[in-house]
Image 1 (cartoon, helix red, strand yellow):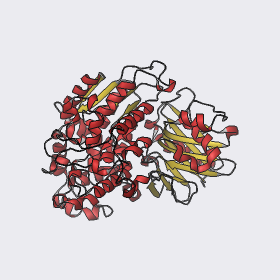
Image 2 (tube, rainbow, N blue to C red):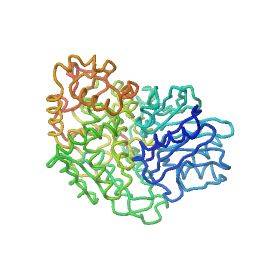
Image 3 (cartoon, rainbow, N blue to C red):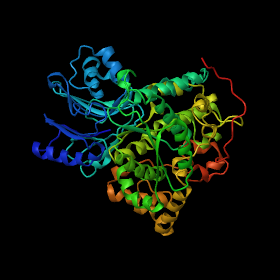
Image 4 (cartoon, rainbow, N blue to C red):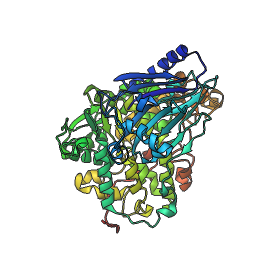
Length: 565
């Protein structure tokens, strides 16, 4: 993962703007501590802070096309770069082994239509020095962050994080996932058009357990490409346990060699975090023992978590309650991971959105609404779980990869018949996923009920946060909250507490508007609150807050009929 800051068509004096961009990009240096690069020409400045994962010795950025016609600053990974080079770019004179250089070669050949050929996580800016054209794009679901804005002179900026633009831009927005921009008018064009957003395209599809298994296995395999030491995040829940088991399966061979050579770092390290005695620490150790990783349980204290909240909100750039709760332990864990020299980790984010794994999905009224809720959740991932996973890790110079959100795997998982994803009296949440990987893990892990990350690290963590905000934010302050925060007024004391901290880092209203502020119960969307009276008039993100949703885990009794073809 890297950090980029770019300005197009700037109006200031050149040296003044160059220094300004250097100051701005220094705000995201934590994302890329390995190298700094800058391009400055024709009223364009590209600044790049590199985290070297692939081709550490020669892949520094910005990257240039032949005769330096094209300039590229990219943040992310292109997992299928070798296949793309082989299929489309055999005559292109690549100058590095960087996976991102294929972006230039494909753009030269296909123009903007090449973006849909990419399978990866990315945000990038590309500039054609001859035609004086720009291209800015973001990956399909927004795993990698990107913001854009304008200053009062009309200069157009993009940056990996909000903090680089705050104080410089008087307009700031989230760059929408799955889109690109090729002009300076602020209009984005959708490049990602999955057919599964139409329920009619999926409602009668065949569900294949084998395709789920093989598709996710392939996703993990291709995402292990790395020239530096890597690891896995292992909470002990279903999703991270599956990813960890698959990573262990492939970790002995070097992916880039087509699995013909031994891996450079064949020992796979796994990491979990929690309060002493937390559910996740115990479950993670059990899984690590079963699959054979070198496991590192990282304990934190409640006080360490409380002390970190200001920095967490600065790095995460949000005041969303669930995100802050879950990001704090992850932020502390990331620092410990960095201390061991790990620069990339695989994580289980995205499975609950793709398979409908959150506990409130038990209340979905029918398959159509179940499927629509998964789509709503996926379309907002860049504001929540993707943001948390990326920025919590990037704060310490670590890249996070999310195989459940692999573009090719999503084509398999989101094209399943939604009826086979639904929760019934006979099958628990994510049953098809559990069935696909039940042979990899102990039964009590495969059939362990969903535990939200902020709960699983230890229930005392959330309880103490509630006590803290209750003592810090008075009822009178809440009564006058609409005067203190007239835009996106906090709905409860915890949001008010986080919003205060956020504003101390990011005082502009434009910054506040980049953060979602909507009613939610157990991580639901606002629309799903209509499913049940039980979800109405509450605003507690934790699933355990609602007794009916947080039912006891149960072992599935009767198989549903699915194809193994």
